[in-house]
Each structure stands twice: as structure tokens, then as C-alpha cells.
Length: 616
Image 1: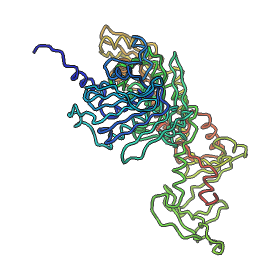
Image 2: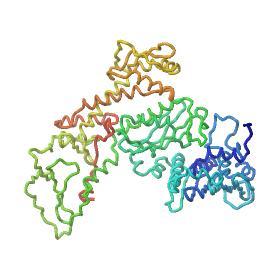
Image 3: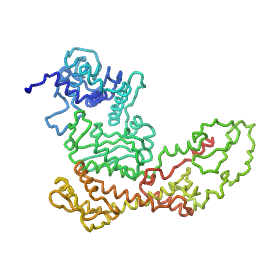
Image 4: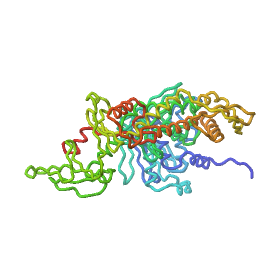
């Protein structure tokens, strides 16, 4: 078959398939155009999830007649001041997106530049242009897209339900809004509650609007800079997590995207503080010199390519870890909320009816050992009904609590908490040990409950990690070197990093052009599958020009050692031992969670406790 040039309208529709995958793709392009135009407020309106209508309005600089006529032509843009594609500072190319959308939909653009006495309207119907013609409109631009993919009906079959497409539109807009807190955004869809994110003076307020107040209350700031790269944003405490990664928002130079390199770096940063199967919530903003990142590797600009991926990965991991270490002692509000819910009537989920005022009510604490039953104070009632509540038979009064224990021995042990000066410490002074595992401490403004095993496990683990950080990893020499055959490129990359790997106890030597000899392995790992380890490291070096595989394995072994070497559950501690553990926790990075991501302590403020008893 002879080679022939395709007609222009077909070329445009093919290009549209690359740029506009679904309604959310079109919204993303149009909103980015509005931001590049200097908009201070952007409104997005859709119908049928964007299939029948997409309207994006902004108050930006607008376009004059000549620019409006050119904006729907392919390879026309106002966002590239010269012909240097390595220095792209804008979010997109207006001509490319509008030309693609106009090829597969009915497009109307009304725009007014401040230098024009009136606005201009341009119509594009499946690639056919009409106008520009005079129109009435305020300063800025309004773009309406109707009947998306009417010119390519096969694409409609691959779209999801209206609700799903509307959710995708909202998510795409939210990701952009997070990166631009100074711009107000509104997203409206028929039969759905409009989303409104007003312009904010600070980032955390915008994050609270888009991600919830709970995130803002449980987030820590991230700051990092290296060799011209700058990372900022907020990440959640490890004990405040989600079941999926949909609440992870990352931007590069203001461009919202999902990137495998950055996702992997985030996982690595949380590797030893997050519970398995859980994902952190975060919003990270990476600023990279334009010449250090290629934003044109993906038609929809959903991915980027860094010139030095190892530098970027290292910056992200280090900055997040430092932020978590600096705030790792801070408890989450979610843990305290769950604790309060467990104490409240019906907190265990039994669904029992509330007792009448003025009557005492037995209750079983959630998770309490069999045989224990507390006796709740009466709920407040009329003054005339007030009377002394007799202590039921089988109960003993301790002066601080009324409890009954049908087991042979009680598990509540009051201890001498020492001087009240300890109340000024973050974790306060130890007052009791419950069930030979939980330390109850009094603070200046509340109480803290500590899991002694989980807390000591983190302390021991951080000590082992500190030894690894000093590169003082003992190695064991193999009697017979392990020969691992690899492609020549992998051998070269491993040989170039042999010095760094040696500091972690792994000895490597080239063994001809297509193999590597493993002469030593870290003693901490014991018997190791060197062949599998070397291939994993080689794969990481090929993809990211960096590898944390060996370090991660060493940390895993250290975590296992810490678990077996820490204070066990069921061990009775003296008062001074409890307080010593509390003081060590206060000086240990990431002490708010154990190696498995579970919280090491929960905190209740005095105000919360008073609310439980109706004092507030």
C-alpha cells in the first residue's frame, strides 16, 4: 500500500485522542490555560459528567481577535517566548489543547482582552471554524465544550458513568487547586453539591479546604532543597493514613501529575513508619529548574522525566523522613478521637438504648479482659432526683475509681510517679501499669496511655538505624564468591556504585563483561539470596539511577531484631522503669508509632475527659 498524507481533520482527531482521554482531561487542559492567563478565579461547570457540557470561565488577561483566531490552530502558542523547548515555564500550550478539543467536540470560545472594546466569539464544530465575531463578555475567557467526542463516537463507549466522570473532573480540578492556593475555584455539576475552594493566603488553609480539616490537623510541614531543587508541602503523620493513595497530590513546577519515581520515593520514605497496606495523605510541591525536567514525555503531561532522577528521589525521601522524625512524637487527633469514642456510651457499637437520667449504668470497656466490669457514674438529672448511689456488692472503692474484678488478681498497679516535676514533660509522669503492657501517665493537661512494647520497639530500632546510618555495617566474606550474570550495562552501573554498596556491607567485583562477583554480604542479613538481591539493585539503578533495596533489607532485619529485643508485653515495670521509657520516647525520632506503623501512645486532654463526664 502506498504511503499517503492523512487529511488535516483526521490528523487533528488522532492528536485529540492523545491529549483528551476523557472529560477530566479536557477540564485539566482548560483550567491550566486559565492559570497561565493569570486568572484569579476559575469556574468549572459540567453536565453529564462533562460528556454533554464543559464550561470553564476565568478572569484572566483574555485574548484579542488575532490571538483568538490562532488559539485553535495546531502548533500555535503564546506560552513559548523562544524556540527552546528545554525551558518551558507554563503549564501547557493553549493551541494544542483547544485544537484537539475542537476536532472532536463543539467548541465555543468567548474572550475579551483588556485592550479591546468588546469580546470576540469563535466557534469550532468538529474541526470546522466559524468566526471570530463580536460578542459581549467581561474581561477574561469562557470556553464551552459541548457533545464531547461526537465526532469520534467510538470513544464514547470507553467513558464511564456520569457520576464517575464527574468525580474525575472534580479530582482533576482539586489537584490543580492544591498547587495554586491564591486562585479561587468553583466546580459545579448537575445534581451534585458545588465544590468551592476560595482563594487562600496560605497553603495549609487550601489543603484543609480540599483534603479536610482532619488532614490539616494531622499534617507536618516538609521542606528540602538540594542543587537547585526545592521541595515543600505537607505530609500526614504515619498513624493518620488511608487505604489507598488517592489522597496523595504531587506537583512539579505547578503541574499536577502522577509519577512512578515520586510515588516510589514516597513509599520508601514511609517504609518503616507506616502500617502495611496503608498510604499516607500528602501534598508535595517540587520546584525544578525548567532545563532539569522534560514535561513533554507524555501527551497529557501526566508524567515528567527528570535529568537526575536519583537526586530527586533522594531529596523526597530525605525531606519526608526528616519531617516525620522532627514531628514523630506528635500524636494524631484520630487516635484520641477513637479513644474518646470507645469511652462514650455506645462507643463499643452495641447500639444499646441510653439509660434514663439519674441511674447508674454498668458498662464493659472495649477490649477489656473477661471478668472486669466498670460502674459508670449516673448521668445528670433533675436536682430533686439526686441521691447517693450505693456501691453494688462485689465492688471495691480505691479512692480514684470504682471497679470490680472477678479474676484471682487485679491487673491495675498504681506506682510512685516520682516528683511532680515530670508532669512538665510531654509524656508526663507514670502513674500506673494496666494489664502489664499499658503505662498510664499524667501530664500537665491530661493523660497518656503508652503501649510499652511498641514504644520500646521503636527506641531499639532507631538505635540500630543510627548504626546503619554511620555505614558501620559488618560484612561476612563468602568462602566461594557468588557469580551473578547480568547485562553489561547493569554490571557497569553496579561497579560504579561498588564503593557505596561496600559501606553497607556488600562487596562486589566485576567478573568479566557480563557478570558480577559477590564477595561479601552484610552480616546482619545472615544467609541471603545474593543473586536475587543483586538483580533487584541492578533494576533499581537502571530505572532510577539509585537503589535503596539493600538499605531497606537491612532496616527490615533491624526492625525484626528490635521487635524481639524490646520490652515484652506482660512484663511488670517499676515506676522508675516506666518513667525512663517515657523519657527515652521523648528523645527518639518517630516515637509516635512502632516499626509496624501502629501508634505507641494515645493522649487525652483534660478538656476531653471533662466532656466525657458532662463537665463541659
